[in-house]
Image (cartoon, rainbow, N blue to C red):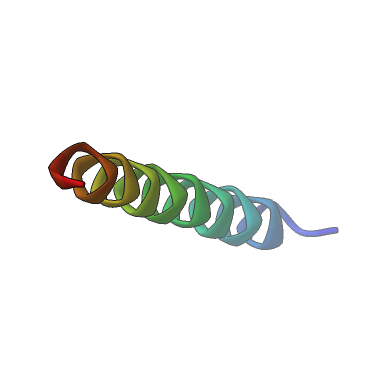
Length: 34
């Protein structure tokens, strides 16, 4: 594998983790209102 591929994979993983964190925070915020 080329270093650029590893960088792209790490970038995608970080994006997915941040997206999951945002969804989880949003879901927790919605649960508080109920």
